[in-house]
Length: 314
Image 1: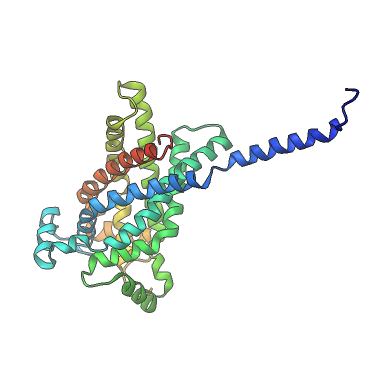
Image 2: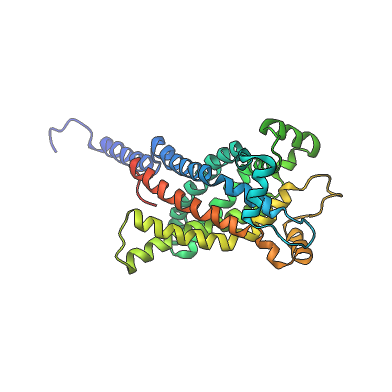
């Protein structure tokens, strides 16, 4: 316009630049939301772990029965009574400190990374079907375990030794077996975590979608309960053998020449050959007794905490 003293051309890039910078800023959520996203996941897993930890101790003791040989197994009740008689009630909470530490770190990452990974796959492939959910869960689980495996090794060692202290146990492992011993069993642990997270989160996600579509259930406690029960059953059936192999590898000590198992595949082969195929499911009922309630508590709590934090549902 005539009489307009401000140069019109100069104002255009400024506006466009502002719009572009706003778009880039919007791509990154505020730190408070990121903290709430991972924090609610970690807290819910830690609380569920605290409730079900005695069953985890029993599971480890069951998995270490008759290592390398066949024989009659003591059941869950027998192991419980034997533990109480020989080591006292406090033994049911052996390794609780590293278990809770791992739950906050591993649980926060495992659940927290699932949704961003799923969104990334959706952006890359334009789909969020069940295969994308499985792949997202597998990545989140494997990555989280690779980072937190040392805490899991310490937890398992403490569960077999009622007199060990966490810091002293770490020092002993490093001094006698080297720092690499803190990543013992990391391969099977990553495979198990990938399978667990994929089966647990993908099943929960899909169960929710199907139940909302096929039944009268709506978003809320009953939907979360039913979906988490399905997820608990599926994840237990898939991960029980991997869990047993992971435990055996983490508990074996000594040099490479004196170890019974060379790797996860060798461990699985020797267990099946010497103890029978069903040995892969040693402690299977304890795993379900722990993983079932833990899955339910984790998802129900996480959904509630996310709601209180102003985040959308899982």
